[in-house]
Length: 465
Image (tube, rainbow, N blue to C red; front, side, top):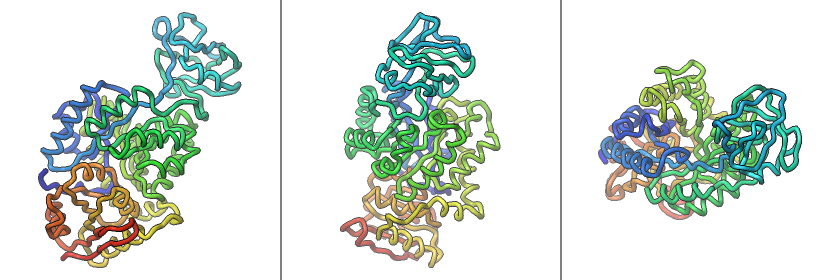
């Protein structure tokens, strides 16, 4: 890798790769526009396609001289209805339809749901949402073939999603497909893994056991069980993603912003990176500019101090992938320069009940940089968790993180304010100055270096002018 320049912002951008952005040229354009992390969505595409994207991202990284991370997003156990004669069923308001535990049906008054364990959980009055909430059904009778009544006229097509609002369902978070995809992704060398439809901390532990030390685990918060078990899930994970699409199906829409604020605050409090995802610039799937409301949505997440914001369909199937990334980059930079930005960051810091010595060291290092009017804070540590603790405090100064280990550098791309820089033989050089030169920065630099022992001890701090 050659020496990179800094992005000029703290929050990072995830771009989902899909048919409109999977070519090497398209990936290079996304990286040049500002994408820091590339998402492989294992709900779509085959292994051959994902392998080609992986190779293209690594090529773009080499060409740009900037670490670029790759996240494998596992599909998870999404429940879907079966298939209908003719591919769909027309549902009439007020009419009763029977749910059957089958893969398909030719009966015009039945809906196949090939999950008998789910149908057994139904209770009278339960609200069922299909096709991401476009179809709403109310359970009017339970039994071997539960009856449901549509809330309005609707069309339900083959294989659309099916969920029971507000319930924790008897499903494992990893399917056989997920395990196959995970093994493939880890062998490929992805930098991060995201787990879909987490319902409990046990789901996180199961996934981490399967991953081992080969990649950090990002738990997607999108189910009622995950919100209920939030603190334990955050602490057991290496990071969390607020997957607002399914959250908006599982919870009333007006509750989603409130839940987002809670997740951000609790994740930041314990130093876990947090990503906000879904429909951030949704209109850019078709249009070359976002709506004012979408711009405000991205800015709100940045004001909350999230580590990263994610583009989904905007870059996967949209007509303007690089433009969407470039506009998100502009929104982040403008928000981070706002006069009230740092005041807002403090509101989402959370309590300091779990504060450790390393938190004091992190704040002291930023204070040292402020005292000498430094341009940046140079940091050396081999631990991703210690690096995250420094990022947790959302200091005024960019953190320059140097290493010869590309895996560490790519994983660090997820962290707020951390700018990973490849430096060979860093231990044999005046490493703070080396990082400044690599970042094309002049002036004083404060530094902090971990010197061994436990997380909370043996730090060296100083200044290079």
